[in-house]
Each structure stands twice: as structure tokens, then as C-alpha cells.
Length: 520
Image (tube, rainbow, N blue to C red; front, side, top):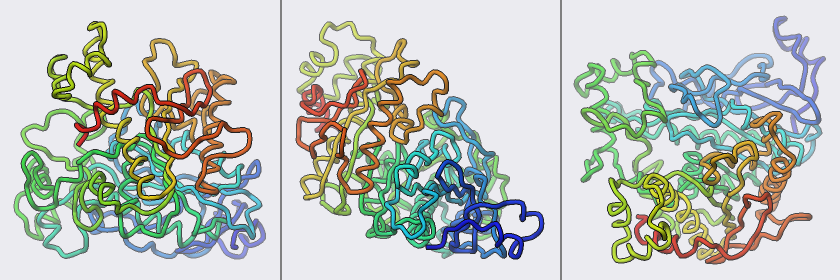
């Protein structure tokens, strides 16, 4: 156990400029770091877990951090990773984006000395093009107050995090392409190796993520490199049936050009031709904003013109090996407890120009689908697209994953988040994508400020209580909480719109059954 208050140590070990900083100190890979302590919580921010991925390390697997002398100030977040911020992001960044961004943050009880506490490892979302660990809504203090060590971190995004090119493959520098996923795995290894310095138990780590972060958790369930580094998983709106990983590194498939082909498209768009070392040097020499090139959540789904220049995560045979669905169908996932669900008005995408097109995806069940989704025939087309898309992309896949986990003999807990914060209910069609985050992390007061109501706070305490119990034991149940049974087909734990947690029959079973065969 290496966390302690070290005001006296500072005078002897650090330059004069840093001697005014006094707080908890921990020894980690690279050296000692000093954080802050307040209200019973010790907080460390901006600790490097890898070398800055800049210059010749752009598009390289995470490299070892360079040791530092003395005690490093860990009172402020490091930069979030390079991106074009998304104006209406549910979790606005708190730092200026930069390529130098591979840092972790830790929240722990201030009295953690001598303890081996459970650990929650948080992975942010943002479509793999936006996001970061600095948003206030991702604060981990509530977990620390509940006896859980909370870890967040940054991983590379956009073309900095997911980019392949024949010149990179030819360079022989190691695995190519899924740099952001490599960062995630490196941060998890850092947690395993260092969390004891903060009072955490490396054998009791639970991984948790939302949206792209939830997808990343699902990927980690099947990744050989992370096997044994966690003992539980929580997935918020992470899908489970998507086939995005069917794209390959170098082989073009019908409708899915390879990551290298897409990399060549991007290189051409910025005036870089060829596949030799000089082409790689030219790409690594590009200013960061030319690599961002307007990519963010607002532009992500715009039609590519004239050719796609963004791949996202892809099947490289190392970091990712096939689709998540194929992994679950093989029963190849890590045998750990899983909590998984989605919001009641989650996101999804259905290519359709009319209601007839929309219901055609149900094939011979089209009439049944119309009766369930549009019984009076007067539902607005856009509303139907969103509802069917959410069912297809997020809600049914969550049920599918829970079923597969349970079938493999592990504990599975399936939920639906239907609660809408009271200030957001006017015109609401249900709980939107990402609206669950401040409830699971118990940061609703940060999210909604003075508009936060007693009902909002109560729902956050309830949900966060289930999460804390799951992190501690692999089971979300505990005193003063409604019993949450392990997965049973046709049932769901609903964090309901009236602020009550209810477990029972799922009223959406029939429509999700209709979606199920067409979710591949």
C-alpha cells in the first residue's frame, strides 16, 4: 500500500515550483504522483500510462511511459485526445484536445491505506470519434465514497485511433490500425499493475462503458490480451449484434473496403501518394487538424465523398478477431458476470425511405410489425425509424448478449433505462441515448444543476447502488433495493419513467422477438 499524505516529502523530493502542492502521493509505473484529497476522497488526474503518441509514435501501439524525477503533479486532467468536439455532446470536454493524451485518473477513498478495494474501470463513448475522461459527469467520487476505486482514462479517437495504411504495415512496427483499442488494453494493464497503490485490488476489476465504450467492453470480453484482467463487465447501450468488425485490415469485402483501402483514400485526400517509408513520414508529419479533417459525431454518418476516409474499429486478427455476435455465438467470451441494457429511446439506424421500406425488413412478419409499432397507421415515419432503429441496434442486442452470457453459465443482469430527468420530460419520447450516464455514475447534480429534483437524485442513488454492489460482488442486489433477478427470457429490470425500479415481464418482448432474426 503506497498512498499517503506527504507534505514533508515534497520539500526534499520536488523542485521548488511544486513544493506548494501537498496531498496524497502514490507510486506508479514511471514514478510518484501527487493528487488532492477532499470530503474523504483522494483524486489523482492526468497520470501518464504510455508515452505521448506523437511524432514517430503517431500510429504506434502504446509505448512505455518515460520515468520522471521527483513527484509529478496529478491534480489536473491531462488533455483529452485529439478530436473536433461535438457541440451538443452529452458530456462536454473539460480540456483542450491534443495528441498527447494517454493519461489515467483515479478516485479512491482517502482512507484506502491497507485495503484491497474493488475497482471500476470506465470507458467513455462518443462513436470512437469524440469523447474523453475530463467531463464533469464522469467524476468518480460517488464510487470512492461507496468504497470502490474508480479509474477513467483517454484513448485515441478518429483517424488517430483507427487508421491503417500499407506503409504502416510495411514498417513492421507491430500491430496496425486499432490504436484506440490498444490504448484501452494498455490502460487496463496499467490498472492491473498499479491500482494497489491507490488501495485497489487488481483481482477485483470490473470494466464498464457506454455507447462506443460499451462496444469496447464487449470487445474486451472476447480479447485474449485482456483475459484475466477483469472479473465483471457492465455495458450501457453497447449493442451486441453489430458487424462493424467485419471490415478487415487489408482485404476488401463486398460493401466493406479494407482499413488499408480507406487509409489510402485518406492519404490521397491530403495529397500523400505511395506506400513506402516516405509516404508514412509525410502522413506522420501532417498537422493534427488535417488528420481530424472535420470528423466528429455530427459528420460521422454523412455520405462519404468521393470515397470513405474513416474506418472505425476493424477485424485485425489481433486486437479484434471477428464480430462480437460471432464471439458470443461461439461462447468464446470471458466467463464473468455481465450487467447490460439500453435506454428506452436509444439510437439506431435503419435505411428506409418510407414506411413500406421500414417494415420490409421484417419480411413475412411485416404485418405483425405494423400492428405492434404502428397499430393506427398514423405514427410519424421518423418516430418509427427511431423506435425500430433503437430496438434493432441497441435494445434487442442487449437482451441477446444477456441471454448468451446466461447460456454460458455466467450471471447476467438485463435492464432497460426508461427514466427521464424531470427537467427533460417536456416532449420526451423516452430516455435518450447517453441520458443514463449521470444516473449510473450518480452525477445527476453535476449534469442538471439546480434543476435536479429529489426524484432524479433518488433514481441515481438506486441505480448507482446496483452498480456498486455489482462491482463489489458480481451481483447487483443489496439492502433496500428491489430484487433484480438474474436474466430470464421475457423479463427485464426497468428503471421506470416514474422513478421506480421494477423487475418483471418485458412488455416489449414480442416486438424484440420480431427484430431478433434480422439484427445480424
